[in-house]
Image (cartoon, rainbow, N blue to C red; front, side):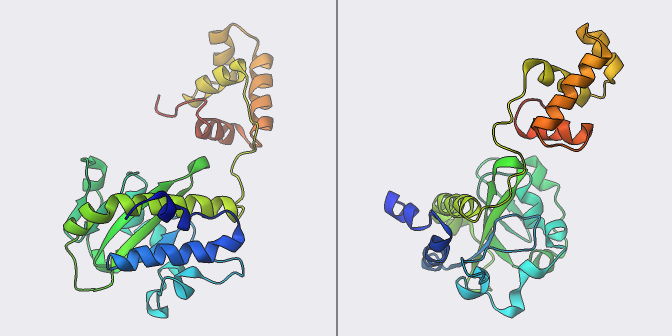
Length: 254
């Protein structure tokens, strides 16, 4: 049963809590007939470890050497599950027949499910995407202990919401506690003029064009963009625009 106490069991305050929280997540998954497969970053083949560097997938979640999904360097590109996590933020379940969500998501319908079992390394799963600050995406896949089970509609309705809370709490607190490198420095506050210049730069305007639009000199535009890049620790104009978008200063959908 989902409660404050059960949520706190999967919350991590420091490296020493990781193994205890992982064991709690494992317990909740097994109680639902599932085995959890956590990933703190779907773009990284590394998988969560405890304070001593032990791989939790082996030591806690019970994945054998035959299912070393975290060592598959191409899983982030090949797996339909990781692809779906880029387009969905709520729990869903999936098998070879398709994706199943509470709300329609047409992006998922376009994902190729050919040879699903081999590419996803499971026949079916309940999946919780975990969208983190600075564009990082984690996920927890809950896979039936019984490998013959491929229909998860009832299990999703019963456990999907709880799995969502547990997974987000575990992954987000793991990333924070284990000191993942921040993609952007704290306190990166851009000025109004810096943001205005970057908004125009984001749609392809040159410094000269921006200066004409804003009624400022080209040197002033360069000054504002350079200041923004320094604040965001960016190495070039493109990265400055990208990092500004990550912080919500500008939109790349213009």
